[in-house]
Structure formats: structure tokens, C-alpha cells
Image 1 (cartoon, rainbow, N blue to C red):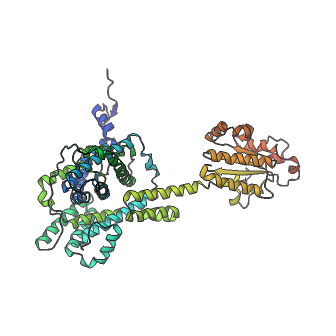
Image 2 (cartoon, rainbow, N blue to C red):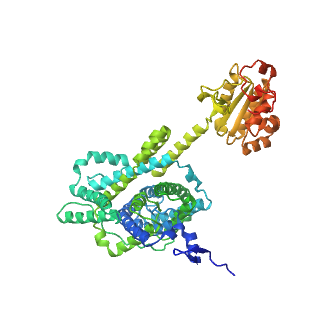
Length: 605
């Protein structure tokens, strides 16, 4: 007999039972289903409409970049967008065709078949399914932890670089100065500067109307969909200008957009080569989707499940490849406007696909007359909102090395592919971390002259500290002693021993020594041997359990002696004091420890 559903408090107070279907729906889609109400639906429908209008020209243009007929770009904006939104983790990522994926796909498939031919189309669909299977495997094997290695500084640079990318290409469409497409960001910016005098006044007026109209609506009346209203106002202006004879580029005639089931038909002899290409495309697509999802999660405060996001992207490509869609992933030009347009749940991406289907079926004629300059004006507004000046100032003031990582990632985003830029920024951040971790802090400790409790202080930071003991050094060890740090630690220990008046005994305060490996173990083996060869010894205070476990397994603890490891400083100093040379203690004028001033060797400091 099945157990009743759990009871939950209702809004009015009495306890009610939560329906089983709702629990299953939450497990299948995510916690966002509990937040769906008429207000969120209104916001998602509005944001989805804007997303549909943005993808109209992009889908057609990206399909051309991929060497495919235009309808395949719109196919890929419908079904993959729905599947990725519902199966993924991000609330705001909109998936579909992108310029990077399209260019990469064309370059990889061109040697195998004539661009645009039936064989080429079949290869594009087949490789989309393969990419989806690989992405599903990454998510199912829970390899999403790679996302943790993307540093905030790299994300800051990537976001700002993406904003500049959006702005540069939006200016090209907004000015209509004759700058050709297909150029990189830097080349487009140079051409824009050279052709600025050829800008079309009508296009500039439409772009400014879309941009500043949306800003004005948001300022005067925050609740309505300001970006959509700005787009409508600019489109009306563009319609009037075109009627008066002004030249304006519009979206153009739209092809049918309903994707149909189609099992890709390819020669199996191509499979090994397709697998290699699919692996590279998987890295490109996942790199873009992951970077965009992390940026949106950081800006919206959402907690991102990276493995679920990978599975959602994989499922969208598997399903898409079987329904005449080519490779899709998170789209920067649609996801960021989706967030800024007020989307609250993944239903915004679902509604975007549905709006696209409805629009092409019912409103094909008016949609075909939307000026591209109007869309460009909205994208300029999106780009402006992405520049986080306060965060840049914070990074500059806080850490110059992190600033260098962010700045390098920004320039890489402008000059390299998106996934290459985030990979470069992440690599630099990891190298910076390795450099820092390879130089763990090693601080000589002493006692504050004015503190009656005789608390330990860092000698280098305390000019008023008492003189150190002539027989015992106190060293605080911070960080992990691994292969990258072993040489630095060895050099520092050797420098301590090399001084003419160096004490022969060393007490290492090891509670902040997080871990060691074989190289770190060798460091302490050498130190123990050197100290005992000079008539001294080596001791440890509060080493971590994982460090002691390695010492036990390797036999180092037996060579060191369990009585050389102490749980607290009080017992450590009391025990070590009894092992010091009494002749030196007799002539010592410092009397640093309480034991030096008491007949009771067990007295505490």
C-alpha cells in the first residue's frame, strides 16, 4: 500500500497534502516549477517574444555560416531551445544556433561533402547527434566539476569582452555603413571607424529609437516589457522611413520553421572521422554554454547544477539532430537579453520557440519588415548593461594579478573564439594559483614583549617581540607541501639552517599545513636528517590527520618518533625544554619560556 503524500502548510494555514504529480514535476524539471504563477508567466512570455524576434535574423544568418539552407537555422532555434530549457539547470540560458558553432561545423564538414548538398546536410545532422551523445555522457558521468575551475576574474573578463562583441556587431547593423560581415571583432571595429561617415541616417535613427525608447520606458514605467516596446517603436519608425524612401535592411522573408523527424543517413565509413570532429565540437559547444550559464547564474543569483546543464545540452542536440536541427548550444546574443528582459523561469525559452512558430505561421509579413537596426539598438542596450564598472574597480584595487587575468580574458574574447577565450582566462587563473600555492608561507614565531599571556606573534611583523630562543626555532607552516612547493620549502628550511647562530631544534606549527605528497614527505625526511646530524631535532605541533596518516603509512612517523608530535603548544614547549642543552640554558639571559624561569619543567607558558 503506497504511503500518502507529505503534508505541507497551505497559504491559509491548514495542512494540506502535496499532490504526487507536483513532486514528480519538481524532480523532473527543477524547483522553479514552484515559482510559476501569472506574474512569472507574463514576464516569461514577454521575454520569450523578444527572444523570438532576436533569433529570426540570427537563425537565418547562422545557417548560412554553417553552409545549410536558412530553414535549418530556424529549426535549431525551436526544438533544441525547448529541450535544453526544460532538461537543463539554468533559468535564463536560451539555446540555439551560434556563429562559433556554425563556423566550426562548416570548417570541419567542408572536406567531406559539398557545402549545402544533401550529403552535407546529412553529415551535419549526424554529427549533431554524436555531439549530443558525448555531452550527455559528460553530464551523466558528473564531470561538470570542471566548471569550478573557471575563476571569477576570467568570468568578469569574458562578460565584458562579450559585451564589447555584442556592441561591435550591433553597431555594424545599426549604422549600415557598408561594413561587410564575416570579419572578426577587431576588423569590424576598424572598418566601422573607417566607414563612419557612410552611416545611414535612417538606420541610426531606428537604432537610437529602439535603445533610448527602451531606456525611457524602463525609467518611466518599470513593469512593462521595455525592450519589446522599444523594438515596436523602432519598427514603426522604420516602416515610416521605408515608405518615404529611406534605405533600411529588414529581416526579410521567412521560411517554414516546423522541424520534422528525420533519421540522418550517412556512410558508416565516415564514423571514425565524425567522432573526432564531434569531440572537438562538443568541447566548443559545452565551453560556450558553460561560460554563458555561469555568467547568468552569477548575475541572477541562481545556483547552477553544471552536470544537469550538460545533460540538458546533450539531450537537446540528440533530439535536435533527429528533427532536422543542427548543432546548438547556449546563445550569448539571446540569453543575456532574456535575463535583462525580465525572464524568471525556463518557460521564457519555451515561449520563445512557440512565439517563433506562431510568428512565422501567422505574422510572417510584418516580422519580415523588422529593421535589423532596431534589433541592433536593443543589443547595444544589452551590451551596456553587461559592463560591470564597479566590479572592475574592485578587482583593480584588490588584486592586480586577478586584474591581469580579467583583462587578458577580455582581449582574448575579442580576438579568439569564445571557448578559447574562457579556456585561456581559466588557464591563467590556474597558473596564478599554482604560483601562489608553490610558495607557502613560512613564518618564524616569537612572543610579544608586552603581552602578559605571552601569545605567539610573527617575528617579522612584531618589532617589539622578545628575542628568539637560541636553541629552539618556532616555525608556522601554512599551505600544502606538494611537488610544486617542495623546492621552495626546502630552500627556506636550508636558509634557516645556514645561519651561523641558528637554533638546532625546530618546532613546526603544522595545523595550517593542509596536505603533503611524496615530494612534501621528502622535505621533512631531509629536515629531520639534517637537524639530528647537527645535534638537534624536529618536532610538530598539531599536524592534520591526513598528514599524520601519510607519515604513518610511509614510516616517517616511526623515524620521527610519536613523542615528537604534540597536540598543543603548552605540552610541546614543556617536553622540548627538557631536551635542550642545559649548559646553554644556564648561560641564557632571555628566559623566553615559563619553563626557563621555573623549577617545575611541566609548568605552562
